[in-house]
Length: 223
Image (cartoon, rainbow, N blue to C red; front, top):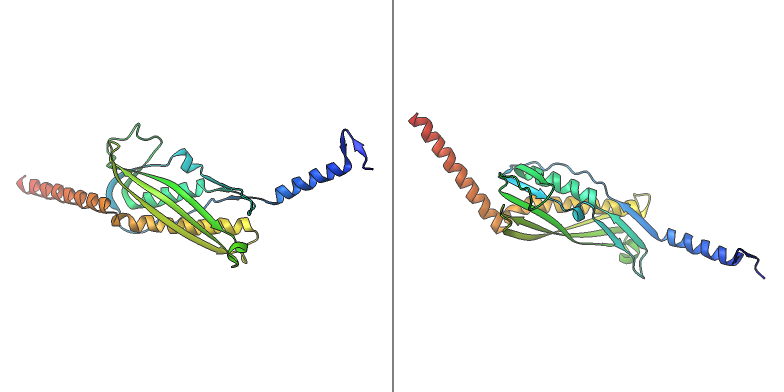
């Protein structure tokens, strides 16, 4: 008969410890801290406010299903770094907004608000290939200063990383997410002018700048 101590048998204690260890072994925590290079290229002549919500800045993906281990994935810091870097390089002036639509600076011509719609990943045992694969989908929302919606579009990103070169599944998944985020940044940067509403806005702004320059030149001649 198992010895009873303080209401629990030795067998029960061992069982509880084993369950706790098993649960801990099946829980994976991933924090993605990626730094991203600043894109090089001409800037669009706009003053843009960028609002990253608290949910976006602190984004965490939690997954715990019957056929998978538990995963806790923190992408907030990496997302913030990516969008601040890329959007900061895209326009002649970018203003981070602590709140929106309150307290909007008067010189802001456009407000961009990204939202993460979906994060999915596959593991080597599921694909039978020794890689992690990641898909991320974002909604990009653009607003006029008065809050009117100007455009909304979706960007999707993909990343993969072989596990053979990394020390742990967590490190492999983190690197795959970083690759996907770089892909998202490239898509955001190169795809902005392909959005019809953004293209029209830029055409109108460049036309206005050309008129201002022509008027200034005429005024100099007149003086």
